[in-house]
Length: 323
Image 1 (cartoon, helix red, strand yellow):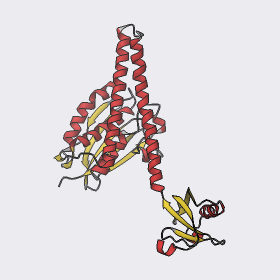
Image 2 (cartoon, one colour):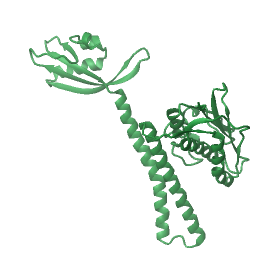
Image 3 (tube, rainbow, N blue to C red):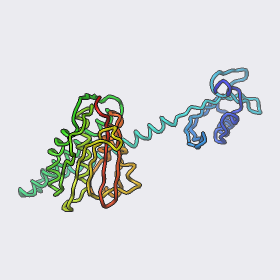
Image 4 (tube, helix red, strand yellow):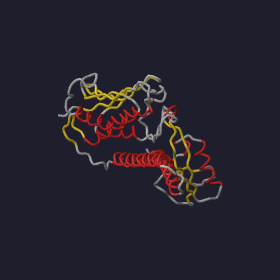
């Protein structure tokens, strides 16, 4: 309560030796005002909060109605303003992390494309087989770059509330069939069986068709990516009622490499990649985060993951019935 804190010694309001020293330094340093940032643990949990602390020495007879006023033993009046900047500091850190990660992810495919184009220009691909190989790599890296940009833009739109959502009544099993048709060539290229195991037509949902399509593409694509080639690989998609029969649940299962228990809770985090997976396949750590944004933020749904290392993973999402 600011009204109760005015004119009280600073150490009676917030007992932090760093802040007390800051006020003392302001007086003894002869500076009319000093500002610094400190961390202070508050509350029963002792969670660190970051404050911007500004202390200003008042001239004799001056008054102030803002901040906490402390009268030092020498008679100098000091007004100290504490501004909690924990959230904005975290946002700034997240922005810096985002820019750093995106820069790295953009640079990797661009460097690859540039290198192979230069080799083509220099005539290093001296036969049709080599040229075809180079073209395929350039095509693959271009698609990777496009997916990265699409994911970044889509996540940004959802997080900012600027995504255009066009909800319609739809049957999710129809969408699953479409996605399987699209993803089948990728599965066959790795000799992976891709199946829809839904035993009946699930009840309708009220959702954005394009967004749910993107969710299914990302989940199925992820399952194919982390199921090794020529290993009797199998990816299945199943739609039905959730355990408590309150929602429509879709499960994408694979018998691939699986996810360690300490990594599973983080697979939907932005830019997170399972450490053991980084050498298995390329990725940005954005695809599953987009799934979370679409299901939880836009559609008020639920996502989940179950996995056993070496035996595969099951990623699920559940959505409310259409009214």
